[in-house]
Length: 185
Figure (cartoon, rainbow, N blue to C red):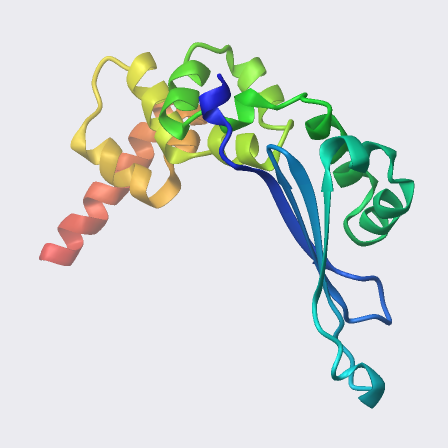
């Protein structure tokens, strides 16, 4: 599992709360936390200010409440909580699995579980509503996929096709076929 973790474990950036325009970047690597900052100001006394960088080992970061407060101000309490967990060695391996492998695993879940998984993170929300997933779900639940169904999926998406009852689906395919015949004539 350790091979799933690259050198950079987490990265986020943001702008300080108004009225400040300062820009910040947080990078958590396997060994340290890096907090970078750029002073952005129209005032002449700050124009020559160089960007700054603060580096701390994980153990130091866990005890640095001042830095944690700065990060919370810019990026939020949830980011601080997440980085503290990373520094304690609590990695989210599931988030780091390759897309194809996650897709394969999700195919074994019940639809209710897919719906709940989609609410856990942006990555899983995107994955659980992806056409690639729903195309496979439709293929697993249908005997045959007709060329008309594939064409219709490009218009409405595989998820919509899965949740459309057969009668409605037949009507949509029939309408689509009639429209294409009218264009030919």
